[in-house]
Length: 96
Length: 165
Length: 118
Image (tube, rainbow over all chains, first blue to last red; front, side, top):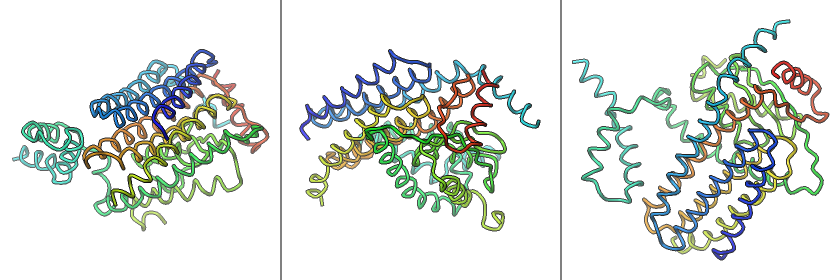
């Protein structure tokens, strides 16, 4: 597969991710869109790094992979307190 | 004296080898003048991981488990791809409970919860002390049985056969 | 050996791009956030895995190939743990999964839990 075609296809996937971030409807959906964009960014960087013979782009992709984990953790800790109190209630009510 | 013992557990050959491999991949094969101090400092400061708490033989079992996990991930991807490509979207999604049978509390359960996200059609929604709430993309009668089989396989990494039965 | 690897590399990369496309299709078409989560964690990870494998086959040195696999491993761990985190956060915030027919018990439980949490 020629490189421009592969990168173009990946970019069109990124379009779907952007549309999902714009459309929502929930925060989780927007986070999914962002996660997909970061995965696609890694893929595109790796492809370009290999075919343009620029190994430094591989390091950039590695950094993106590290940041993806941090981004998800941040999203979750922002809503963590709500998660915690909501998790308590069903536990108590389960016994009836 | 205890300092020596502490350093000895931190500087086990396996950890050093793993870190050296990591450095070798990151630095592209050379730059060992920087690498050796970095590896030593990292080995001393890094907390002990869940992997090192496995039974000694279980490390080999863990390596043997990896191909199975990759195979399941491959099937998971193919299934989702096929479902997404169907002209008419007929999904039979459901939330099911998977009660814990044999896996003890601890890293094993976390491992299973993350692995479930990769295998065909299942997604962990909640990790509770007594059960796992699983979101199934396309429920078939066999799904609960598959989950039980997977749990037994993972449990084999963490407890001995005798404790299992 | 090396020639054989170089021969299959483009196919692996093409398959990886294909999985990315189906993942995007799933993200677009699936009915609720949970189903989309399935599409992303499975299809995109597999796509990136095949892509990394394909590039690793062409890589100049063994350490470069290992670095590519390291990228994949990181993404795999991050997104498989992240999927559970996102799903449980969504459930706790009262986002109800769309369940059609399916197992009665599952559907009812889901509905009950959803209404409690909101």
